[in-house]
Image (cartoon, rainbow, N blue to C red; front, side):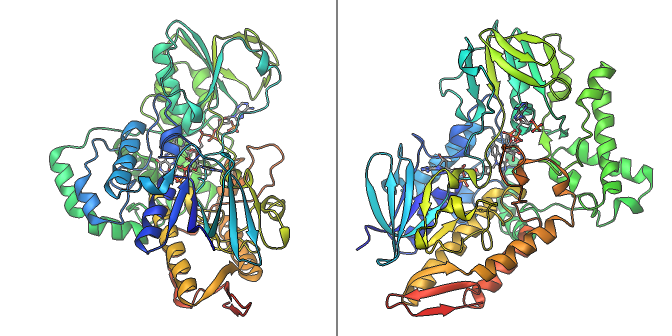
Length: 540
Ligand code: FAD
Ligand code: NAP
């Protein structure tokens, strides 16, 4: 007899909503969270400057209209403490705490084929039996620190941004080295530069960044936002990115240079990456179209950074704009005009080691008192493969994914019955407003579980054939775009030895939702339901 209907692993946006959704469906549920607080990304990434790049109007739950009316966001792009407060408010409001266990890492999940249940092992030495496992472990939660020889000899303190000390840091009077210039590096750099005596920014790949134009939301705007939620959310659900973005509906290649400049300038001034990239239909499909917006951004960098040589080094050329996450910052490029900031080009002269007093590149030594790694994550699959998941026939998830992660609709893995992934590989996930995608996935999983139970099934599993078809579709769509042209974490390129597979689904949030709805309407096409006696129904 199972202890629980559902074990949820993780208590970020996904785990929190999974607990609420499963409980509302009458299921017994318990979430295990490795951290000492809930919030996931917004608990761990408490580095200075952390804030979201999807507007608060979108980057918030939509499952309960009452919640939308009660909570008031203070900023267009809220900072980490406010998002964390929001998630704690949600847990309080729906009284989720009794079903969430903090400070508990799930180390293994083992499928018992005869009992058709999961045994879930945790690092406190306990084990629980559950009928279903919902893996809400996060696409960007498994931190990545590059193997730098000699790091253990470094005399100063070093930090990874996603494990920032909760008590904060004081860099006043210090020389700080920052490795990494992705979304995180670009957010934290100006904050460090404001405190530290000297900041060395070790840049391997120059990145595109657009302004946030972050600001406080006025009382009148709050009223309008709250009144507009039903329409706004409906539009978001049907959109490509999970955010209603109004484009021109035209190809950039059909526009005159003057019209392009006007559109890009208006969107640059308004701030935010999605409106800029969504302005023309072919920016992420045609390299020639993409060059028009890339040139525009490089021109803004030259305009901002006073030293032309520095501006050239900061101007991205290695990939099409948008093929890596488009960073957002109001002050990153301008920061390089400060006398205490030095850009170190580690593309031409790589980091070779750390030593007690600093960082050594192929051509120079940099004396630093502290080192900050903004070096990202073993994304999408990393948090899952760090757990010993053993499915049917003793096959491990690590083994099943040795050539790269594969999941039907990004939600279920063949050979792993009654286990579901929230925003797993092959779903819009990290290419969308993740909160909306999380809600859609959790609701799909909840409905699939209740469907299986009401059909008297003891297990439900994705078929190999449906998985193969879906993975092929995910690839076909991705390779029709510019996304795979970048050496990005979307393809696992940031982790040495990781198989290169394009993981997010580029086909769009609205079309993806329609596909999931059609699968459900067809009696969960592509899933097999098995009853206790072993009778199987195959929907394909
Ligand atoms: P997470 O928030 O990552 O939560 C997963 C949780 O699972 C973590 O708390 C982790 O500790 C726990 N966990 C993992 N493995 C185990 C285990 N074995 N046992 C127990 N617990 C475990 N997305 C956007 O759409 N817009 C944004 O503006 C945006 N900003 C971001 C800013 C930063 C700094 C980062 C890193 C990501 C950002 N993202 C953004 C992506 C963000 O990760 C998602 O939006 C969202 O917060 C993910 O929620 P989640 O619950 O799926 O995963
Ligand atoms: P990231 O995008 O993977 O960036 C990691 C950075 O570290 C890159 O600049 C990378 O260089 C560099 N790096 C890694 N190993 C290195 C090495 N050995 N030597 C030198 N440089 C090295 O990670 P992230 O910035 O943490 O962002 C991850 C994702 O989280 C984002 O894409 C985004 O989805 C999300 N995020 C969002 C926000 C937001 O604005 N809301 C903020 C932070 C994060 P290369 O490019 O050369 O590999």
